Length: 311
Length: 275
Image (cartoon, rainbow over all chains, first blue to last red; front, side, top):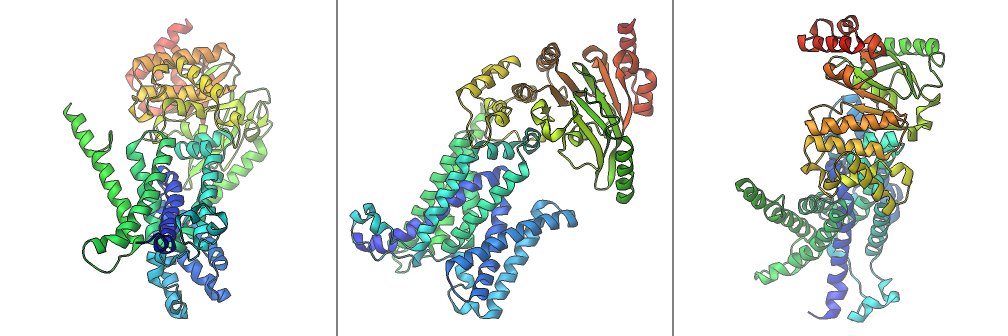
């Protein structure tokens, strides 16, 4: 395989998958610690009706109206979840389950009924994303990776994820201690005058931004997996939040790379001539890494705990 | 029910506020009414904490002791009631108040060390958009030393014993350097070493002129550790100096027939101390 083909077709897809995984994976730490893992799930599902609505209203496939629609749907769903939780007097998980499945189903109905599925936002795209469609025809040689004017011609979905990742990292760095405090002891945070509600809302807004940007690239399955798997894996490997954040980032980003490589080239190595869904494979790899961590983690792994019990 | 509680609460508020809030008291609560799911847990509770004194909050299970602390701190919604910290509303006096929640209120599997948790007591002072510095960490170390936990600074909190976890919470409150300390059952289920450490901390706080309110379960030690007592059972039953208020009559009124013989023994002890 020549550098040119790799740079033009594989590199942007790898970048897209890895960056989508990274921004979701980092925020996922706080969702998992706050026992809100389902929130990532919920938001990534409700993005679908938002995107469809954005398309129906504007009639274009421009990313801006779609992202606005998706962001709007995410906020509506957060409000609805709170409403169902209060009025229905059910636990938050149940409220999320009710809201996101109904909104996702509404999105599917909208797609089928309005003919929006004739264009490229079909259900399959919603589930698995469109990783492989990212191409970077301007790239011709490895040296192009260092040339800003060529880098600027990367697909807009990649550039958007670069921006979102920078925003997510800046958010976590800026509010690290508040996120930590509010995730550990929200009541105590409130007694300090650090509003747990405010910090929690900021987190959900960032989750919505990451989910929308990532959904567009890799679909809802990968988004859900990336909010939870890297954080849960990293938690098994360390007892420090800062280390956990770094590890989750490494796990997320490398799942993106390994998953794509397996999906694109794995079947060929096995003698098939078709590649498989990269987004699906990335989620599978993230899941496998988690299984490995569950078995071999130094303190919390199955083997280590067996050994401790025996000792 | 809800409606009744609301109007009742409003009536109380109009009738009873400010007039009963002592601006000189470090912590005064007037007409506090709190309901969970329309069931009132606390009805018209009032208390004026004496400055520089150690007050035990006692009452049977479900009497609303924790609710009294949480409601007055604004951590759970209240139907009515006024809270004053040296005459100021609680939201303007956050830095003067330190709260020690029940140990069971958090997930101790959280990826944090004892030092991390104690440093959280300094977060307000550190301010938004800033990270704890070297001095903050030094101060957190000092606070851990005060509760005899300096050797465990880098230990993940889940690997501490219950008593050690309680001491970490105490150290976090000490780090706040507040004027009023509200503690929710710090003595619950702790080992002897921790009990001693808590008592030492309480003495230290008193010697510095701080005001301390402690939700307490063990009636026997009320006269030993505390100078004042607040009896709660769905509302204020009685309050005052232990010497005057810690009587069989008040205990009976608060606990009804549920008072055990061992608890009554505490009264004898109190009487002995008075005599």
